[in-house]
Image (cartoon, rainbow, N blue to C red; front, top):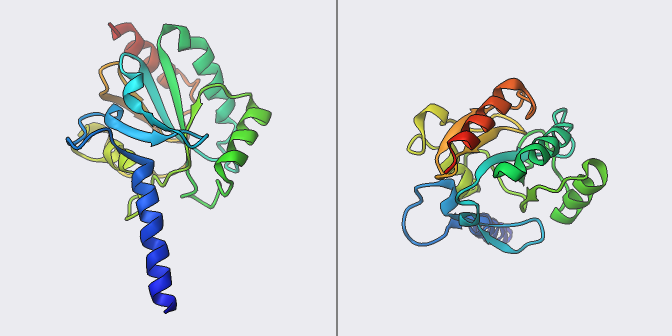
Length: 194
């Protein structure tokens, strides 16, 4: 009985994880912008709304040594949003249990501590496995862009997507959003934007 209950709970959680990020239609995704995800308020958002923008996808955590990068992300967003940059934060509790809060708690933390104004989304699983967000399975998959493939290793991994929806850069946790490498890549993607 307990095994059946546990199996049913696991299947329910897997279904929620799949809905959290799914392709916008039945066609196979060709871009991260082909997915629908839930924002931090729980509303379904098609990522196609960011077509024509340069987007920075970041898996975030509130209790990590890299958590101060929220401030850098906000500064980067403030500096370049007028030119077409959007920052998309995806909280994840995959590494060191460093994002244990609810979506409401995460939203409050980001707002109160870092005055974030960039778009935040519902907590997802970015690590490989049965519960991995389809969006992150796509971002890290070798069919997307082999140059940037491979599992996310820690919090605050960044994927830069150009205005056409193609992954054009990836930065690990140690690269602050205001580091020269990230800024150069953002500026280059914005310069190519039509």
